[in-house]
Amino acid sequence: MRKRSNIKVMASLIGLVKPLTGYMILAILMGIIGHLCASFITIFGGYALLDVLGFSVPFSSLFAFISLGVFALLRGVLRYAEQACNHFIAFKLLALIRDKIFKSLRKLCPAKLEGRDKGDLISVITSDIELLEVFYAHTISPAVIGIVFSLFMCFFMGSYHWTLGVLAFVSYVTVGLIIPVMASKLSGDMGIKFRTGSGELSGFVLDSLRGLKEIIQFSAGEKRLEEMNKKTEELSADEKQMKKITGINMAVTNTAILVFDIGMLILSAYLNSKGILGFDGVLIPVLAIMSSFGPVVALANLGSTLQNTFAAGNRVLDILQETPVVEEISGNKEVEFHGAKGENIFFSYGDETILSDVSVDIKKGSVVGISGRSGSGKSTLLKLFMRFWETDRGEVSISDRNINNVNTDNLRNMESLVSQETHLFHDSIENNLRIAKADATMEEIENACRKASVHDFIMSLPQGYKTPVGELGDTLSGGERQRLGLARAFLHNAPFMLLDEPTSNLDSLNEAVILKSLKDESRGKTVVLVSHRASTMRIADMVYSVEHGRMS
Ligand code: ATP
Ligand code: MG
View 1 (cartoon, helix red, strand yellow):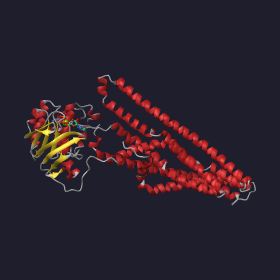
View 2 (cartoon, protein in one colour):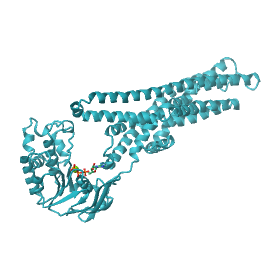
View 3 (cartoon, helix red, strand yellow):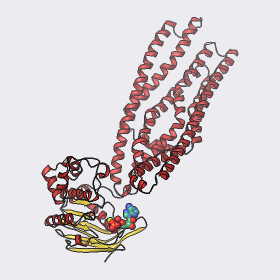
View 4 (tube, protein in one colour):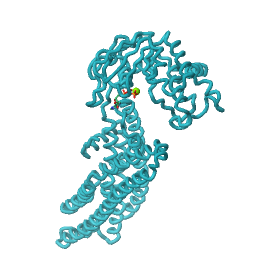
């Protein structure tokens, strides 16, 4: 994770508000007027009191009383409108950010997400984004409101005597800025630590759920539970620490407010005793300062929670600003498939060289086999043909065009990949197949399933194609999952089929049906076949063998 300064996180998060600037300005205006109304309820009460006591005041007590009613009413309405506006902005923005996150994830797929903790990702998408609500609804406009309102109040009190204005300024800065900054210093990296920890915990839980069978098989439950408890306790300890700081922060803030209220009383009373100020100059400024800490206290209370929010923002920005391994391509002329080639390909994941100087020529209409020991880079080679990764050196081309210049959509339409692990969604068999072709007719789906030798099996299920498959295809056998994966490829009906161990889990009867389908298909299609099985390789027109990253 990249570590950004709070200012940087704040600037980037504020940058996202741009489309809603109008609403933000409205919220700020309503907030300022609303807070002024609130404070001036007390202050006008003071004027009314002065009037009753026979002091000269700028207006009559009747006017003051009517104004009190108007202020009270306005205060309620404006407070509601300001909050509604802020929350509208916040939730609209959260939706926008979620949208951006999904776009980024799509771009990062699959290369950058291989090996990433999925539970942690879920925690960014759900709870971290949710936390930004605090920033958008309770931070930006309250900060501006706090500054403008407090400055206004400083001038108001300063109009009695400049020293009162200065004292007010010092109190606002202390309560609204110095105390929260110190509180956030006190919590240090606690926010980041807590967010990362909670991401890790959800990752751990998800991983444990996925590996439930292994955990039971090897009686590792106790140990997993112990580890989960340890992580939870660490998180609780962090949270306790953060709450403690919040508590201290609140206590210090409230004490400071009392001290400044008394300070104002002492200063104005002193000026009064010197004959510089009248009684009204004591009463009004004291009432004004007592009733005007609201907006700065709202900021002060944010102090320690903001750490948490910035940590969440940091993690969200990590995904938004991550550069993808391969960029999506569009805008080039579409190509039709007539053969693919890999020429002198070099490829490594990080420092680990996987392929060096590999060349393959895949002619249209042929079945090309790729063999090699486990870990030699066969699946990697297929990923390069899918452009999931880019080659370090050498060139992959489709229809004699460098794959880096083929539109991504065009490429996906030309290719279907059946990977070693077929992923099934928690949905019906039919919908699982439909992701290969959303508007497929039932007849097309059944045909594809016949080719993949899985139609009879599906029909034998009580709900046929409507049968749910359970999460990750839990309720199906390995061979059934694999055949559904193949059925998807047949349904997608792309001219270039890349099949990674398509028969590894099948008995020879099913294998024979599928090989026959492939052979029939290959009249109009080009097939790359990775397999360890000699029986499967038999249908290949030519076989390349990868050993230690080299062709042999
Ligand atoms: P198998 O026959 O077992 O499927 P394979 O030939 O398909 O093996 P690949 O999946 O291409 O092998 O992997 C080649 C090597 O690259 C392996 O050593 C693997 O550990 C490594 N590898 C694969 N994916 C990644 C990745 N995303 N990051 C780092 N290393 C990887
Ligand atoms: Mg493989």
